[in-house]
Structure formats: structure tokens, C-alpha cells
Length: 370
Ligand code: UD1
Image (tube, rainbow, N blue to C red; front, side, top):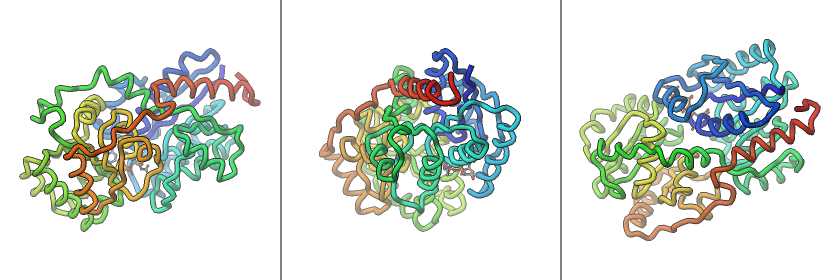
């Protein structure tokens, strides 16, 4: 029996881990164990997704909590290494691009434990983003690179990664979306008093949009202005809430009825809010992909994206954090002049099956064996 660690730490990891954990449970000869680093710890950022998505309780909890990048990454590295020394798996599967991804990969490879990276190869080519550094480092030390869109394969090829380490498997986050569509919590629209197709959804938490009070104030002012044309709903990440409070914007926000700020949503609420929105404004990576799948117009509040397929054949456009560009794109959506988008190859709800097959095949062919 080959024991495999599945590592999760932050909110976007949980939706990716859920289908992979289920698919691996069906593979004879593989036993998986969930390791939670504790990077995200608030119930609303964490526990709620485990219960909603049916993810088993993690066997291992590293309880690292928040901190500066160096402190958080170092804590994960140290604690995961200690765990590996006590109980060594045959391989480690990491997801996405968060600090937990890179720290656990590094702990594992240093001990000779092979690493599988799910969502490998994505590149924004923007090294000011912590996630870009995490992606580059993780891919350079991972043994098996499982890619969600064709651009990722090209990026890895350009970086000289040998083809036998790379597989294009599709998008496991879309697997979760497909499974959960039937359970979307549509009641949230009535609770927020918004009608189907008659509101916009906003999410924003990137350092580039929220850490500088001047930029944050400009963004909030722009949202106020847009919300007078179309009511906006804004579930707020804790990083953003902290920034809003420190910039002294919270009192003003509480008064504006057209821009409703809420605590982080459950998966089912967020899904309902995305699929019924007229438009989504976001700086999230996952939401760019989910709106493309759902064919909902998406204004991506960034200057670049590591998920270019969402802008070439999907429904997303990069608008940065410039009010003029945001306003112009928003007006186009309101006028109904937005591309409808089309299906992305392999975003079909079956990516986790291909992940499991790839891992089983690779373990079978490697020294680890199955
Ligand atoms: C992390 C990821 C980012 C991802 C995001 C999704 C990295 C480098 N960044 O960013 O790629 O898009 O998760 O949510 O890994 N906090 C809480 N409660 C929590 C978690 C965080 O209050 O449960 C607050 C703390 O003040 C913390 C801050 O949010 O310092 C930032 O958390 P952190 O995990 O460092 O980064 P995120 O901004 O969440």
C-alpha cells in the first residue's frame, strides 16, 4: 500500500483537494492522508468547506496560523519536515500556489519524498506576486507536474522541464463546481435581497489591491460608483477586512446599501452568487476560472493572469485597478456587449480521475511502486 499525503492550507486548496481525495480513494494500492497546515484557520475560511465538500477530517494538523511570508513558510517547512521524519509517505501531493504548497514541497524533496504538483505550470510572469514565486519554486522541485490548461504545458516546456514529468489533466476546481452546482445555496439571493441577474459580485484580497490604503480607497470609491448602477455584493476576505478597518473605510462602507459587504461566504453561497450574477469583479485566480465555466462576465482586477485561457476563450478580461478601465468594461457588460465564451478543453468535471490515473501510473512506473 502506498501512503500519499495530500497537503492543504488555504481556502482555494480545499476545493482542489476534495475531488482528488475522492478519486484516489478508488485506486487500489493507494491510501491517502490529509495534512492541513493551518495557514487558514477561521471557521469561515476553513471548516465550512470541509463539511460542505465532504472532505474527511485531516489526519495531520500543523497549526501554523498567519505570519509574514518568511515566518509562515518557515513554520510550515519545519513542522511538515518533523511530520515526514516521523511518518514518511511514498509521495506528497500539493495544490495551487499558496505558501503551504511551496513549503511542504521543499520539506518533502529535501528528504527524498517525491512531490506531485496539481495545477502546475501556470505563470503570470509577475514576480511581485508571492504566488508566482511559489509556482516557479514548486514546479522546479516537483517530480510530477499535473497541468490544468494548455498554457501551463507550454510554460514548462519553455523552462526546459522534461515532457515525461508533465501531464495535461484539466481543472480539478471545476470538478468541485460541477459536483456542487446542484447544491448551490440559491436562498442567499433572497437573504441579500438581490434578484437573479440583477447584481454584481465582488471579491478582492490581493496585496496589490488592498494593502496600499490609497489604492484600496480608490477601489472602494469605484465600487461605490458602480453600485449605483447595479447593486454589488462583496463577501470580504479577512485580509481585506483588516485593510478596510486600518484605512478607516469601514464606517462609510456600512452606510452604503448598494454595496453590501459580508463575511466570507460558504462554497454553496458563493456558487449561487457567481452563477446568478450579471457580472463578477474579482482578483481571485479560482473565480476567473469558475466564471469562465459558468459563462458569467468577469472583470479581473489584475494586470496579468496565470490563467490566460480565461481571457482568450473564457469570459474574463483584465482591467487592473484603474477606475477608467473598470468602468468601461462594466458598462459593456451592462449593455450586453460581452463575449459569451466557450468551453475550455478538459474542464469537464473529470480532471480528478485523470489526476488519480496519472499518480497511479507514475507510482507504478517509479521506484516507489504501487
Ligand atoms: C492566501 C494565498 C493566496 C490565496 C488566498 C486565498 C499565499 C501567499 N497567498 O492569501 O494566494 O489567493 O490565500 O484566500 O499563500 N487571516 C485570517 N484568518 C484566516 C486566514 C487569514 O484572519 O483564517 C488574515 C490574517 O490577518 C492573515 C491575512 O489574512 O495575516 C492573510 O492570510 P495569508 O494566509 O497570509 O494570505 P491570504 O491573503 O489569505
